[in-house]
Each structure stands twice: as C-alpha cells, then as structure tokens.
Amino acid sequence: MNSRLINSIIGFCIVFLLVGCTANTEGTEDKPKSDHIIYSQEYTKELKAIEKNMLENPEVFRETSNENYKISATVNLSVQDGVERMVYEIFVKDPKIKFEDLKMSFNLNPDMLQRINTSNIFESNVLNDAPLTISTDSETTGASLFRAFLLDKSKLDKETLNLYKDMFVKISYVIDEKVHQDFFKLQATPSEEIQTYLKEASSEDQNK
Image (tube, rainbow, N blue to C red):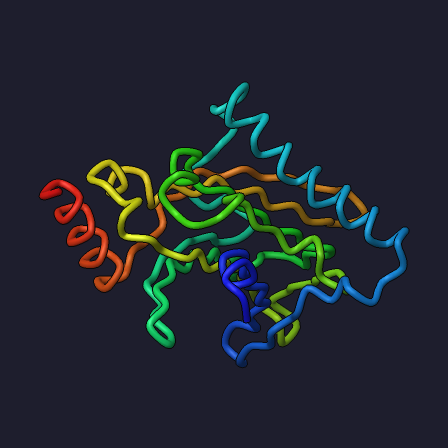
C-alpha cells in the first residue's frame, strides 16, 4: 500500500446500533462511467451545501439534537503498524419515526486542512451502494459515518487544540416522500488518547 493511498484513506461505516455493525466499501471502481458522474455530483453537492452555509449562513448550524433524532460526534486516536490517525465519527440514533434515504456528511474546521495529511476534510455516505433507512421499528435503529485522517506531528500546533473538535454536519432524510435537511455544528467528544497526543504534539511544536 503506497503512501498516497494511505493519506487518502476513507472509512465508510454504517453501524447498526444495538445489534452490531457492518462495513460498506466505496464500491465505485466497477460501476459504469455514468454512475461515477452521478456519484461525483452528489458528493460535490453535499460538500458545497455545507461550505456555502459555513460562509453565508452560519446561523443554520444547530448545536443540539432536534426533536426527530439524536446526533453526536467523537474523535479518537488510532495507531496501527506505527501509523497514527485521527478518527472522526458522527452518530444518528433514536429516530422518532422512519427515516428513508438517510444521508450523512461532515466537514472539519477549514483550518484543520493544513494540520493533517489530507487533500480534503470532508466525508459523506452518498457514495454508498444502497439508500439507508433507519427506524425504531426495525433492527437498524441508528447509523454512523467515520473518516480517519493521517497525522503528522510536525503540522500540529497549539491552535490545533482550539480547532480539532469542530464538525460541521449535514443530515438529510425522507419522511412521507418529503426531504428534510438539518445542519449542525458539533463539538466532537475527544478520547483521552487523542487529547494527550495533541497536547504533547503542540508542546513539542512550541519547543522547536
């Protein structure tokens, strides 16, 4: 596996809360060209919706769950084969009614782009092969979406501690054939491991 592939690693995971989980791959390599175009358009549409509101309508981003479901976010440290990554994950659970075609997307604080090894700080499940439905009346009562970013201590500074928990989230779903869209600005709950890692890295930066 080359470094470019590692640096662009993307995790797609739909978690069946309470009953286990199943992982979904990107699944686009064997699709016709027309499907690639459609997927690319959907992905770009999600990203632009978040970025536009961040710049022009920041007031649309709520900071708490709404009446239809609960939403939360976490950020953790992953170390595998000596490679360190920061893993962001959002959770949608406890829907009050049936949600069809559930789409989840998130973007980090724009200033994080220069602090982690990646070409973009956006993630979405719109590339999944099949629409996602969750309901309290089914086994699938919730879902999550995550992405892992490669860390480089030389890029981390004291300001990182003020930025890394910010997540700008877009959730859309269909109820009775009507599309609903919600935007959130969440503070990801950090694990002790990622807090310690970032504090040590920022201290090393100050001592250079």
